[in-house]
Amino acid sequence: MCSIIGYTGSLNVAPVLVESLKRMEYRGYDSVGIATINDGRISTRKGVGRVATVDKSLNFITMAGQIGIGHTRWATHGGVSDKNAHPHYGCTDDIAVVHNGIVENYMELKEELVQLGHKFKSDTDSEVIAHLIERYFAEQKDVTQAIIKTCKKLTGTYAFVAAFEDGTICGSRYDEPLIIGPVENGFFISSDILGFLPYTDKAIFLDNKDIAVIEGPSLKLYDSDGNPLSRPITQVAWELAAIDKGKFTHHTLKEIYEQPHTIITAATQDREKINNFCQILLNSKTIYVTGSGTSYHSALIAKHIFARFAKIRAESIMSSEFQYALDPIDSSSVLVAISQSGETADVLQSVKTAKLMGAKILSIVNIPTSSLARISDSFLSIDCGPEIGVAATKSFTGQLSLLYTVLDTLCYGCVEYKAGKLELVDAIKEVLASETEIGQVADRIREARDIYIMGRSIHYPVALEGALKIKELAYIHAEGIAAGELKHGPLALIDKNSVVVIINPRDTTFDDNLASAHEIKARGAIIIGVSDEPNDVYDIFIRIPSVRVPFYPLLEVVPFQILAYHLALRRNADPDYPRNLAKSVTVK
Ligand code: F6R
Image 1 (tube, protein in one colour):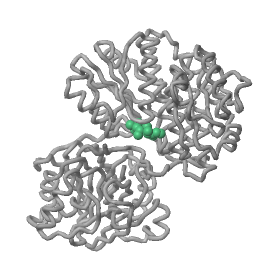
Image 2 (cartoon, protein in one colour):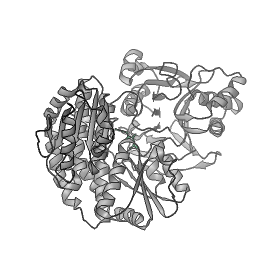
Image 3 (cartoon, protein in one colour):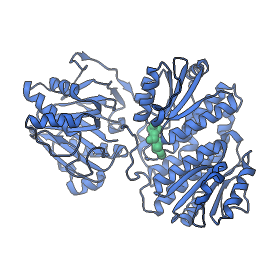
Image 4 (cartoon, helix red, strand yellow):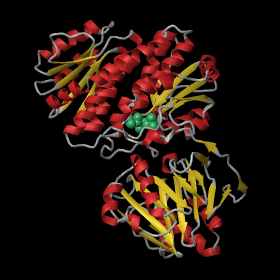
């Protein structure tokens, strides 16, 4: 959602913060702000827009000091405006606060503070945190007590960092990540390890309600009652090169091109860990698989392949719907939660609900240090490296690659994914080599009003995923449809202005799909076939190589990723930063 960064040390803080915020911008990017402390005074600059744009007009890097905090915002409470950008202050300018999350009781707190004479300047929920800290700091002049008392007043989710004019930086979290990066002569404090990765590969992950107080080179951690505590230092595995765009124009394109490599990494798992994961699955009576957005599409495929190839029944439930599901979850159940970030609020909420009902939690993440991994009984990581593009690409195929690896363990090698994944590497490379041709398809359909993507069986979740990519990257209405459902309603939408993409590899769905294609053709729509076999019914043909039947979803999503990327370029949308979206959705 939002990103938070704080730094104390010997470097000039402003350029450090600007670069950190650029690296984390994928989390939220409608406004940006920085506060630095110099000679016992805090100065702030903030404005609406992306980091680089606002930096151009506000010249952040001229701000003096070696201590400071910064923030990029993804608006939840209060519109996108300069006054709502962080940092926020209380009534005076001596404590600056940046926040990520939602303070659910902010109206009540605001009323209380207004009655005490506090004056509010923004429409955000976050500003109450600044006023609360100000209020409690005025009582005792004790930073730690001010934070403890503030946290006790807050309900909802938060990670916040406050900077005091004497140079003290402190923060706390509840259900939003906050991580400390120890460096020479100081510390980073950030919502994401990307905030400090160029400076250290060591991280201290704060737990819910932990309080961190940084004074120069000293870090003190406390629990919510002020008792000192310690947290381990974790070695972070990601390589810095992984967050560079390299020769690519966008992170999204780079990540699409990484897939021949990342599907192999995702399938390379510690045997003992995967056996343990599978044993928990096999010991359970009922299996639920959950996720949001793209990760939910992986959950749908998991359900399908577990049933078809391992004869194991699993129910897939969207994380945002999980709390309304009436399924009898108990201690004989297992919930498999799939999430790239491991921080998605809906997913974490589902997991907490299932845990309360006694279920075991298994998870598939890309960030092994994420909240999801840490609350799971067992987790597997796809280890695809950072996914910066807001639209999920390599994490989807990574999740599938890992799920097929799990499947192969469950069914004693019945799908032979060990060999299958090598075949997929070559096939994905072939699709990548056809980027120019797919770009030409984008040229032809760039003005489309509606794009329908159809598939049956295991290809239906890919149709949903393809449509999601087109919606979020190119801002075109796109819909995934189970091809057999066409005649039950969607056919009414089809006319000569519609573009219909049919996912039609040579398997048992092939002939039925061709029949549907003919029905659509009769209504005048443009038909695009994504298949390993051409047919006259297609107006446009996107060829994919033939692979073994179970593995098509891993391959056939790639042309959609490329198509969505090229549609975005042709429609002047930024593929890395789709409007209104954020990479990790840490609010409900
Ligand atoms: C789509 C996309 C989102 C995420 C969803 C879940 O391209 O990126 O739909 O898939 O927000 O995120 P994770 O997997 O981090 O839980």
